[in-house]
Amino acid sequence: MLAQRTLKSLTTAVGVGLHSGQRVELTLRPAAPNTGIVFRRVDLPEPVNIPVNATAVTDTRLASTISHGGAKVHTIEHLMSACSGLGIDNLMVDITAEEVPILDGSSASFVYLLQSAGIETQGVAKRFIRVLKPVEVREGDGSNVKWARLDPYHGFKLSFEIEFNHPAVNSTGQQVTFDFGSGRYAREIARARTFGFTRDVEMMRSHGLAMGGGLDNAIVMDDVKVLNADGLRYHDEFVKHKILDAIGDLYILGQPLLAAYSAYRSGHAMNNQLLRVLLSDESAYEIVSFEKERDAPAGFAALAPAW
Image 1 (cartoon, rainbow, N blue to C red):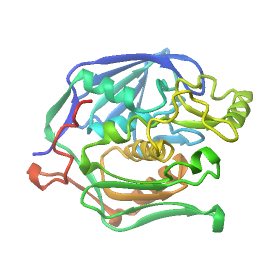
Image 2: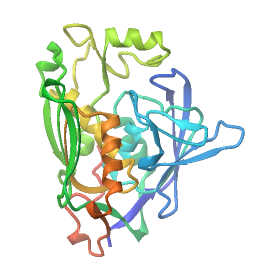
Image 3: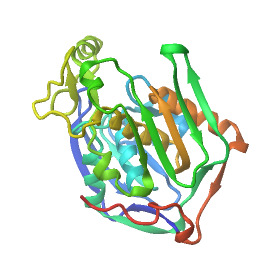
Image 4: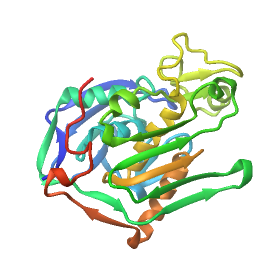
């Protein structure tokens, strides 16, 4: 049986929120089978659980935000991406503020945290959402078009293309296809950092955003070049970060997808819209498990290799 996974022990991290600049403590704890991933705001007078699912997303400006009642957690996509990359099904995330710490701007630190805690299989079948027919969302036309799409596929594959019309971005790879069957999420995707432009950072800070952002947790560009002294981690780091974000956004669904995702200039809002369109059509998907690991798509049965 291809089983669900959680952590063997708890692990903690301390950092700052990218937009709030607030200090935040994060504690990742094992969770029982079929719990899913649940954020718990332990800083509130009465702690509030916020289960991760597509309809819990209440804001997609600059990041993916989930909420329950009045409690919110911002910028969950990098941690969710790491959970997807390592096949974590069940996890309790205690958090002491309303934004997940940005750490180094990628999901690599979260991968390290999860792997250091150890990954444990559980005696219950992992449940996938298998896409049965194409689902697409699209906005704009001509040079303003952007879209995201899911197609049936025995596995999980992502293809993303960006277009920023910026010299530093134009000189890099702008289209990437990544297949989870390769087992190389940690090596090929996880280290890609979020990025921004100095002109946008100045504008965001005037509105109380990006207060915790800087060269140590993001790729920052002026009008012509990358300002980080060490340059890029991958030749195509910009588009790989968009893949990293998409993996996290899609894992907000609550179960791993069996599908081929493709997108052009998509973002958090469109990714969540795509999930909601999928869920609104019961003929577009089914819930499946694999009693024999050999019947599962490549890359899902083996635990992800350590660094």
